[in-house]
Every structure is written in C-alpha cells, then in structure tokens.
Length: 397
Image (cartoon, rainbow, N blue to C red; front, side, top):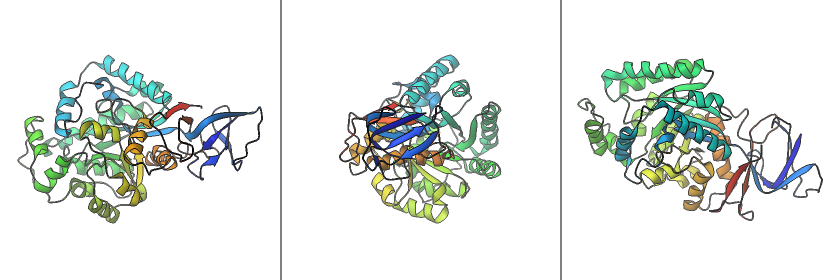
C-alpha cells in the first residue's frame, strides 16, 4: 500500500485537490482519494512530490509501425508531398520495423503513456504489443480509392484484424481517410462495424486539399491520387460539400467514432455532426505537433472547446513528429491557446481518450477500483495550473 501526495492532484472527477493524497495497493489499484482541504499533515507514511499528479496518459492516435521513419520525411511540405514521401520511404525490413517499434513503445511508457489507439496496416507490431506494458487498441486501416478493389481491400484488412484478435489483442477495421477510400469500401466497412459494434477512426480534414477535392471535384489531392498512387479517378465526382459532410453517412451513428486531426473542420461541419450523430460517441482527436509538421497549421481548438466537443490528444507517428510524447503535444496547445488550463488538457489527454477507446472502466481518472497509472508533472505553474515550456512528466506508478 502506498500513499502518494503532491501540490495538486487532478482526478478528472473532482476539482483539483490541493495537497491531496492517493492511496493505491501494491498493484496500483486506487483504494482511496483523500481531499485534505489543502492541509496535509506530515506523516512518514505519505510520499510527497512537488508538482501535479495526473492519471496515466491515453494516446488516442499513433502509428507505431511507422517509428522507423523518424527524420525521413521533410517538414511543412503539405499533405500530398507528405504522403508521397511516406510511400517512398516504406520498407519491408520486418526486423527494422520491429526494433523501432519496440524502442518507441518503451519510450512512450517512460513518458507516462498507459494506453494507445494505434493505427496499423500490417501485423508487424503484434509481438511488441504482446510484450508491452501499454494497453493497445489497434485500428487496422484500409485504403482503396478504386471501387473495383473494395472487396480485395476489405479481405486484406480483415485478415490483419484476425491476426491481432487471435493473439488476444483488441482490433477493429477502419477507413484511412475520405480521400483514400471509395464509396463501395466505405459501405463494406460500415457493414462490418454494424455487425461487430467496433470502434471506428478516420483521418479527418487534415488538409485544405481534402475539402477541395470534395467541394470542387478537383485539386492537388486528386492530382496526387492520379500521379503518385496511379489510381483511376474517372469515376470521381465532387459533392459540393466538405469531406466530412460527404462521408459521415458511412459511419454507424451509435458506435464510437474518432475523428483525427480536424485541422480544417469548421462550424458548419460541427453543426452537421450534431444533427447526424450521438455526440457522446464522437471524439475529436488533436495531434498538434503533427499538424505543425505537415501543414504548419493547428485546428480551431478554441471553437472545439466552445462547442463542447469531446477532445482527445494523440501523437501521430514519428514520420510527422519528433517525439511520441503527450506532454509535448499539450505544450504545443498551451503555447497557441494560453487560456486553456491544465485540468482541461489533462482530461483531454487521459479520461476522454479512455472513453473513446472504451477503457474508462480502468483508465483515465483517479477513482476507487481503477488502475489508471500515476504521472507526476513537474515545472508546472502552480499559481495558474498551466504548463510551462520546461514542464516534464515522470511515471510514479
């Protein structure tokens, strides 16, 4: 049994507790959360830390299998050039992919990440995940712009999902993005999700070019698909609507949906979403460092907050980031949106991600019976409860 205290504890279910105490058993299961009203009595039985205690981080969007691409893709080139370089730098060296994934899995855990929503195109990270201290939900991502290849893409994706499931790992089949999946493939994925009640994820409005492709039926994204992907675009017609509004009907309204990136999502899109979906099952995943790396632009986070959207945070991959670090992501948000407080961001980085992945029965908050992990944040401005450029994280349990 351990009693752990700090200047503040952010529980996600109460206001921040000044000089609060968390009591956990030897396995890290929360036994008690004590509000001392700010008056902690000195006792040998309590471990006191200078800083803020928060639950373990939930990284809602990552690509572990792309860890070998660190420093191989140029920054700030835009989405089409980014995708071209990704395809150009993919390798078939399973050992190199596995070693890079293992290294980043260890580093994520050392940086306080306890659960990950991870995108995969192959089974290459299964061995890493089986040995990991991190809980993974793997989103097996399928591509297929050509309607003729929809059934083939679905079968390949389901084969990979089956490999994860046979190894006892959570997995679901998901579309990559609006610009890389045909209407026929979208329908097949929807049927699968309806049958399995599976969690869905999609890269959403990551670039202006994605919206342009749908709204105008032309643009650099369509040119990229024709020239670099070598796909037939003769069937393609614009819809006159944003990409999100154009494809939203392809998702069951009552399953969890993670919309990732949302850099060019606007108020009209949000209003449309609210009309069409159960918003308690709709999650907006922010990957700010990746957005700066690729498009050099952040989503309208202030609008998302005003609209009471359920926001999560992810790291994306090392192809579009320098670190797989949640505090690095939160610092980017804090720098651009200084009014957002630490308790708000911690909820985004922990409980909301846990809810999105349907693991909030164990992760995301300090509540009796849960085993969420305990992180210590240091170099926090304790007067305003905001991060600083030198804030860091250390797992305590």
